[in-house]
Amino acid sequence: MFLLMYDTGDRVVEKMFHDCLYYGAGFTSSPEVYGQSKDLYGKYMPLLSKLYGRRWVFDENPIELPAGFKGNVFISREGNLTASIVGGMGRCAQRRSRPETVSINSKEVRKVGRVMLHEPGEKPLSVKFSKKGENLKFDLRGGTVAAVAELLQD
Image 1: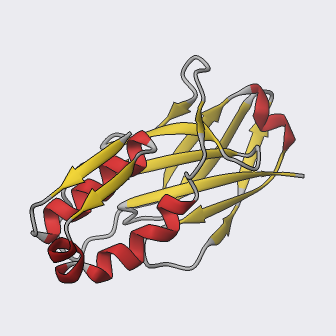
Image 2 (image 1 turned 90 degrees about the horizontal axis):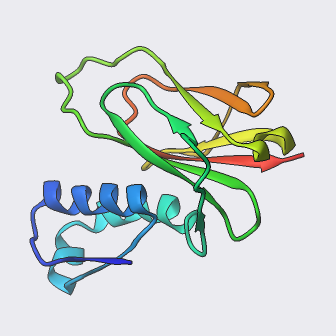
């Protein structure tokens, strides 16, 4: 699946990247769009690359997200669970929210030994998590706009 983008506005370009993360999709855009939003491409490409070659997870309710977020769970090319997380609500300027909990529900979480969180323009961050049976929980940082969480095997 590929999303086509011809609008040159930064909000539209960032929405394209959010949709790509949500659906695990690729994108195509004109050189004009790229030229005007090069910084956004630089921030989102590392996240999108985590979804290359992914397979969708169709377990029942594989992800539970806080209000205002949407996302999906995939199996990466390397065989790890990978969750895409996209915030859909506007934020009041200069106000960071409290951390919010993400829950992944799959038999595959039993193999997870580390969770790496990737956010646009940020260095990857190893996050604390808890596991109980087929459920794994971790917190998003306050102010998260979009992220990809890699649930890496032991």
